[in-house]
Image (cartoon, rainbow, N blue to C red; front, side, top):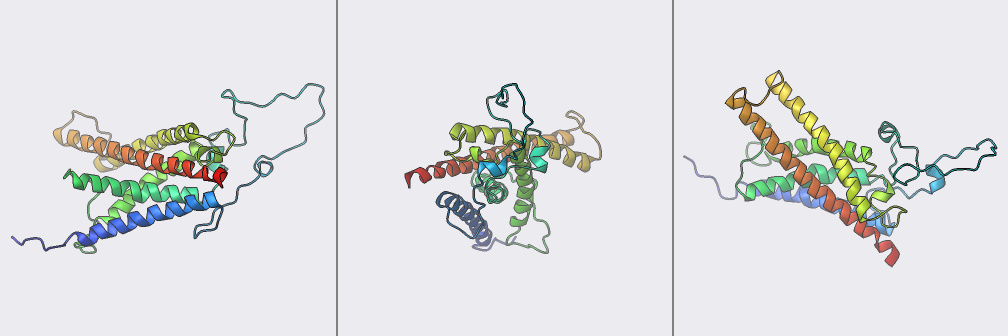
Length: 262
């Protein structure tokens, strides 16, 4: 039996680390550009005045006094109250934030999960299998499946962020009218709940395509083992995505306080 050559997996570890550092650096520069208002290699959309966000119209004269249009939670009603409008015409006050979120959700969170499982000598997830031994015989065989799996997780988070209004200025800026750490955490939790629902549905569809029918626990040992593995992997994905996104959004909110100090 051939012994593994010295430094066989060093290239793959260095490649993982380089991708992780690049994504963190990219997200940091986008946050710094948001705070300092200086251009970086990622374009940041300048903040729009309120008059350009909400379309005004002239009301016909009426004898009745005007009543403020407030929702039940005390917030003013905007154009994106409908869940469908949040996807068709979303409010994105910083156009670079979705790209930064995608990098964190696609690269940082899955990479941290792989590192954590590797350091604890835990079984690797089923999605972390080399795509083709001919293309990636030894080096870089785990990078492509990590990025592919992370793309699906990033898609779930982006959809959840749109549904949870996580791209409005209140969700990441302390200087916004309703901004604050509580608002940041609340928006992340709401968006994460929607993203978790999408991940559960996609996992069920994956099992449906794998077995060709709807499977239930208790049918056989093979099905029970596959369902257990799917549940554990889904819990790991939710945990590492939640920690990465929450820390990233809290850091971005903390950076917004530098505007007042300058």
